[in-house]
Image 1: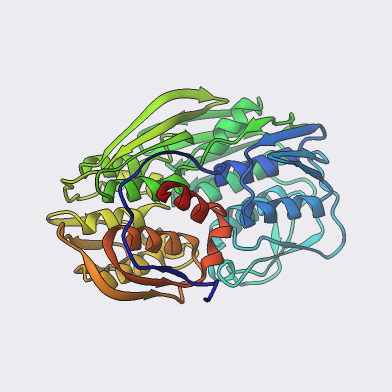
Image 2: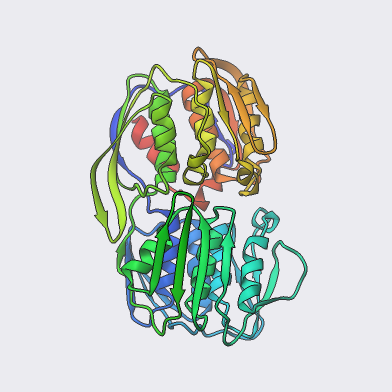
Length: 438
């Protein structure tokens, strides 16, 4: 048996289960980086121990922070706002777009050259979205390429900037916000709506940040700081991770699932808004606020009558990591679904919009693809018996996990390559699946 390939030959049986999922990846990486800026001890429980988060930990260790693990608890003693940088420093971000773009912002005030590298997939992704604003702060980039590897040299006293973030990229916005902590004066950002974890953490840490929100934009002012407080945090479960099990339940027969203690920040739950509009039976219960973040339990039941959707673009930013799953649900609807404004999907670990179409084609679901949209002609009677092989997807963890959910709900005989890709964001994905099945 090839341990690198997952084989699925039958659909999942009905289930009624309660599960937990691992810590939120976005919050885990942000916690690691912010903890490294405090000279006091920061403690996290339920930190996601994925490859992306471990890459973040290795980077801050290279920058002088001390990290210890005790069972499900991580402690970091940082070095303050001035990292200890060695000459010709090389940092490896692995597969993590979040880490790579955020850490460049943190390094804005170092006038020594640093080199940032990543894996094959990350090295194909566009870094111009952070290069442009960091140049305004005074950073110099020693190569003309917009891809990794990148060589950057910061400025001892960075200049505050005014910047319009047009993409709706939380990574770009956060990179600027982290650089602003070290720039003399007030940095002013006008940002298209995106996930707001950094703003909430800044407020909790009493970092001087002012935010004015309108329907489409956030206006953010940040002052330089002299120190950062320690951050003790219990990381809630990741909505992106639990979304696979939400869709598994929606598409399964006579099933129920309760997913406990999930981050249900409104900038992250676009998939729930979308699926509910498509007729999915989903409720958020036991909701509360924890250090600025909305936390709750998600209860899901099978949904037999699903409706097609013309998906409003306002959900794009808050569902950007879950659209492949939305496409699966659309495949089982009676009618045509339309998703548009999704060019960002092709700037992820793999060209995900293309892969969404490809998986649908394998399943025999008619779809029309452009460079930023997809029409899906659903078939509620879809039941597969053919063989399907998923491979050569740049080890994109979300392509792997989406294919797994498709195999368990649509039928057919599936061979899904690169089983280890789940380590990037959700190492316990397959174990959690087994907990649901057994």
